[in-house]
Every structure is written in structure tokens, then in C-alpha cells.
Length: 487
Image (cartoon, rainbow, N blue to C red; front, side):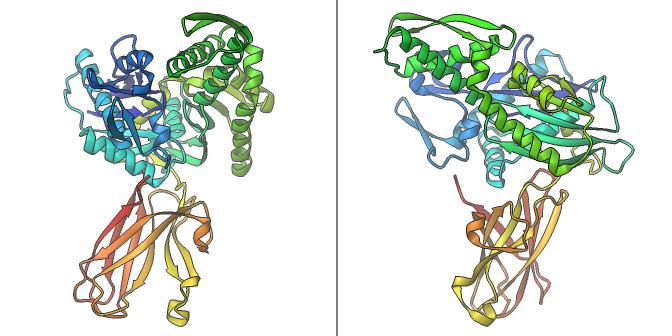
């Protein structure tokens, strides 16, 4: 069985096609697996609800939002109860638990298959090559879960929407996915009579999500506590309680106009009341940022939108619908399976992964190699430039070529610095891109000074990089590897 996984900032969810329809692989009544890791010397490592429960008592031993820490250079490791964990280990632990939950779900639903052949993992719309490789390595090396491919979260949601029982064909939708850590938007066209059933016109992402709403709501709760006790202080356990209270308040304010509760800090109970209007006022700038991204994407694509489809748990907030109705009064707004759509779409895509006509997506970044411009003429190391091989916006899979020259007879390897950027120019300055690692070409022992090595770079449908190299004089294939810079 192939499964789809929504690897979320707050919750993760495995799903599969069962009798032709997507379904979650969870025990009845489960919302999802909290993407939370906890460790202490007595309990060992815990994931999900047990980790949440222990984290209430010992918040210093819990790690949340690990998905959004992958690319944070200031968070390479976490020290929990005297033991150090790197980020990849923690992500691997979460994937191991997702795999185990999926296997238990398969058994619980008495399905014939008792084996997971691999998974398609959903990722935010503009996760980088290094982030994709990080997640793949964590799942495969740490959790022994084969990653068959990746799919962008709003694209997965679009596929789930178009495949729902009431789904329509030959429509163009704008998916707005407000999750825990990112807000992703994509414009996707469904046309099963065309060469490609689903076409991604474009997509964008902000590293902003429900946790940012939670943070502002937590600060509001703390202000209300200080109004009752100006000398109140918040230790780690109190901060954890404030966070839990904020998340609960956010959920309640999605259906109530006002919410009353209390939080216990230092043995004292502090009552608070929050109105929906108050909540929407303090978070209005966050929402406006996401709406500006929607505006940019819609203007850039200049295509007719049939529906705006909202997914992601935070899309349940009434302020989201109100903003769309105000900004786009002529487009129907639909809330579709906020918590499940992405996992469902990933599961559907997993079953069609080998069908090249199923999905047309585009490359989110350009990839180039660093060379000295006109080296043979100037030999000036101040003329370093990035020469793009792959261009942002190209249809996936996409390939490009680059040529390197052997500088001496005894040169055994060629090293090429690789850059990732949003630059669509053929040549640009290194400071306008991001250095992500080095390609090494080796094994051409009989090559000579001046020989040309042709490098072919391919970005596959998942956004991962594949490399090939040959000596143009001899026609021999070279060994070629890329070592990505670690976060």
C-alpha cells in the first residue's frame, strides 16, 4: 500500500485510498498525530499525545513546530533532560510514529495489505531543495519509510477537492491553505480531457501560520493576567499553559462571539474574556499579509478563478472567509476538509505517481552553477558569476546542461558550487542567490587538460535534483554527487 502523509507543523496525518476513496489511517475519533517530541531519562522518547501530556509537566523537555525549525540555522540541536538531539533525529522519530500509526490504522480497518510500500509527503509550496532532502533523509534513514515523492500542500488539497464526490472538472481554483506554520496558495486547473489532468498555474508561500495567531493570542491573555496582577511572572510551565489556553480560545472563537476561561499561573487562577472582534483586531495584520500574497498571485496569473477553496485548520477562523468575501465578492468561497484535504490529496497522488500525465507542476526555484565569467580570457576570480541551469517556472520535470573544463592533466575531480534563487536571468551575481552545496564530478581518470565535462541537472516532479555527467571527448560517464550544505 502506498500512503500519503500530511507532515504538519502542528499535526501530522497519514491517509490512503481505500476502495477507491481517500481515508485517514487513524483509529476512530482521532484528529491527527501532534507533531510533538518529548524526552526524559525515565520515559524515553515520546511522540504525539503522550508527548503533549508530558510536556505540560516538563515543557523544557518538549519540541514543537520542528517542521518550521528545519531551515533555522540557530536551532541545530535540542537538549532535552541532558541528552542532545539533532533536528533530523527528531523529524525521524515523528515519521517513525506516523508509520506505526498508519500500520495500526491498516490493521484496525482490516485491510488486506499489511505493508507500506512507501509514502508521498506533502510540503509547503516553496520549501527549498535542502528542506526536501532533509525530510526525505529523516524519513528514510531514521524511520525506514521510503519516500516515493513530494507534493506541494495546496496542490494536494486541489487534487483532493477535484476528486471529492461533488468535485467538478474543467474548473480553475485558488487554494488557500492556512496551516500551523505556513500559508500556501496555488492556482490549479482540472481538465481530465487534456494531456495533464491537473495543471498548477503557479503557487506561493509565506512562513506564517496558525502558530503566529496563537502567539498573539497568548500575549493578549498574558496582558489580561497582568491587569489582575502587575507582578505576575511566567516561567516555562506557565508559558506552556498560556499557549494551550490560546489555542483553545482560537478554536472556540471560530464558533463563539466571546470566550471566557481562566489560566492557572503560580498557584493562582486568572480569569480572562476575549471577544472575536478583539481577537480579529490583534491578528488583522497577519491576515492582511496572506491576502496580499493572494492578490499578488492572482494578478501575476491573470486567469479566471471559479472558486476559492480554503483548507488547513486555521482556515476555520471566520475572519478568513470574511476577508475573501470582502476582497473577492464575485468568487464563491468554499471551505473543504480543512484538516484532511492535504493528506487525502497526497494519498491520491501516491496512487498515480508513475502517471506522467496526472499532474503538471512547475519549478519553484532556479538552480545555477558558479563559474568565473570568461575565465580563459581574464582568469579573474573577481568575475565569479552564477550561470542558471534550471529556471524558476519551468514545467516539471525539467533539465538543463552546463559544461566544465579540466584545468590540468592530473586533476581528478571537479567541484561546482550550486546556488538556488528566484532569479530568472541567465547570469547573476552570487549575492543574489543562496549557496546550497557542491557538486563533485569524479572518476574520469583518462581525461586530459581542456576536456569538456557535460553536466545534466534535472529537477524531478517532486522538486528533487538528479545529476548526470559525461566526458564529451571520450563519451564516458562520470561519477557525480551533490553534497548539500547542512542547516
